Amino acid sequence: MKKILVGICGIGNGHINRQICVIEQLLKYDVMVVVATTEDKKKIINRKFSKIPVILVTIPWITCDDNGLDYKDCLIKYRNNNIDQYEKFFEFCLSIERIFKSKPDLIISDYEPNVAQYAYASMVPLLCMEQQSKFIYLDEINIKGASIKEEVYRLNYFFPKYDKRIISSFFPIFVNNEKVTIVSPIIPKINSNFKDSKKVVVYFSPYSDSEKYERILNVIKDIKNYTFNVYTINNYKKFEKYENINIHSFSDKFQDDLSSCSFLLSTGGHQLLSESLSLDIPIYVFPLETYEQKYNALMVEKYNLGFVAKDFSCDEINNFLSRYDEFHNNIICFKNKYYNQNWEDELKKLFD
Image (tube, rainbow, N blue to C red):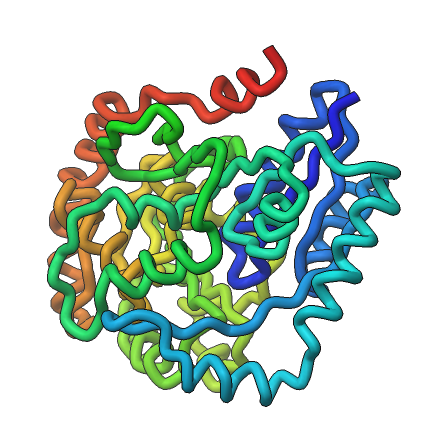
């Protein structure tokens, strides 16, 4: 039996959704899986895999700019957090070896640094299996207010070495490194339901301010010929009076709505964009103010898979809708051309 420790970053939903797919695949083999993640994501793992042990992790908040780590800001955040990171890390290491009754045979990290640190200290093979690592191999695109160096510095700080990298990407990346494999997006298999041509899914990331989202709601309330299913953690009761707007909290219903909608209005997170493309759904993107999300949005625009919001107006949405068939057909051609490296096959090689 192979003992595998899976570390999952607790920020956002992309990491956990990706690794749920990976864990489901791992459990087809003779393995013992233990998960390391944050408190809120532990609840998700417990619901999905009741027999898999979960070890809690804490990480310091590492801030970077195009000059490298912002040590002063990192120190302030560390002190404000009031957590002894060394104590927590050593407790974490003891928990790993207590549960496995030994060291694990393999460690998989989806941007979770504690498991990587344990791998280095224990000389256990480390597989980085996520999407952030792509920035190490991409040329920098000049994006106002953000720099690729922020992503690269953070990757170098958390994951200075690895035995293998499997990078999930919805757009093509070309890497000449035998230890690195680029795969088609690691996403759940979503059955495409009957498409409702008037149904729209709107996704508001919890990692942004509500003022921007209110502007969007004020625009879509006047587009009466579509029904907008808005997923958010925020309270927008004043918009519930509009018949074309349904406000939802995040739940399993989200994938049902996504699989049957006509198009998606969303922030620029990699995982949701990947899921939308898997269903041939055109995307209207309003990225958060991070380099990663802005880069993802540029790739949507570059490959003509959707539209990137400039001012989010009725005219802009109408322009997007006038090109709907163009975007839809381009998505199908794009996937046929580039989606030829299966992540399940790469994972299987670990057991061959």
